[in-house]
Image (cartoon, rainbow, N blue to C red):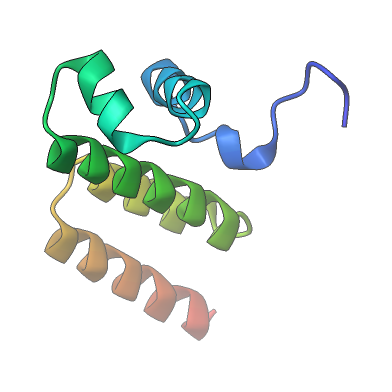
Length: 99
């Protein structure tokens, strides 16, 4: 990997996500400190971190299935509800199994 090349797990993250990760690292992983920096509650920061973890897991788990990764990213980013995402993924798998 080139020095300036972004790791695969970071490709699904936007600039705001990367900024959050940087702040998290700079305060040695203290969610309470991150909450202070963003002036939000601890549960809000915890939820944000959980969503970032989901995004990273999605990019690692489905790198060979870009369509499924896209659907999961849309669901994690609340652009698509989880039930609809499940239906789309199930139907996609059915169609690809038949081929």
